[in-house]
Image (cartoon, rainbow, N blue to C red; front, side, top):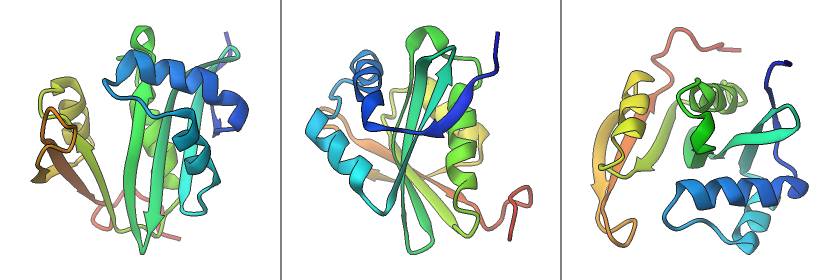
Length: 152
C-alpha cells in the first residue's frame, strides 16, 4: 500500500470532492462555487489521494499575510487517521510568510474544535448565524509565534 499523496486539486477532482462535502457538511458548495474557487489567484486547494481515491481536501485563501481556511473535509470512513492534520500542515507550509490563520467552525462540532485547539488555534470570536442555523466559532492561529515553521 502506497503512502497518501497531497497534491493540488484539479477540476477533474470535483465529483469526489463534492461527494466528500455532501457526506461531511450540512450545506456543501455547488459545482459553480467550486469552479470559481479553483480559478482564484488567492486560493490554494489541495486533495489527499490514497490508492487513486480522494480521501480529503482543504482550501485556503492567502491575503495580506493571513490565511483563511475556507473548507476542509475528510471522508467519514477515513477520519481519525491524521488526514486533516496533514492537509492543514501542507496548506500552511505553502505560505511560510503568513503570520495568522483563521477558520470558522460549528461550536457543536466537538471533534473539529478539539483538532484545531490541538494545532494551537484559539477561539477569538463568533460569527452570528454564519451557518444559518448556528453561529460560527472564529478560531485563530498565530503562525508567526510557531517556532516549528520554516521561516525562509
